[in-house]
Image (cartoon, rainbow, N blue to C red):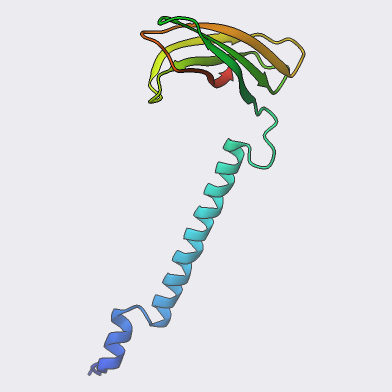
Length: 137
């Protein structure tokens, strides 16, 4: 004949506080920790954490709003000398809306600092011009 569990034993079983429940909880915690560690390592590798050798520094050196339809933007890109780049040069209104965009191919010059001036055609008078981003060509 089976002995009925006590109310305290039933509560322990219900909320996983038995030896088997503790083992399951510990195993789940170890698996979650392992998944988080693997995810952190993958993120670090993909983002170049700890020293990105291909980082580029973008700087707008100046801009001139020449007319309602043309803005000229001066820019400087500093980074890996051996990478050809494609950079986005924008003209914007006071709200940050893009009025004109030109993608410029920046060739390899052997020098990590490369600069230029780009003429951006706009849909209406711009307020500012800037180098927005660069990527490998």
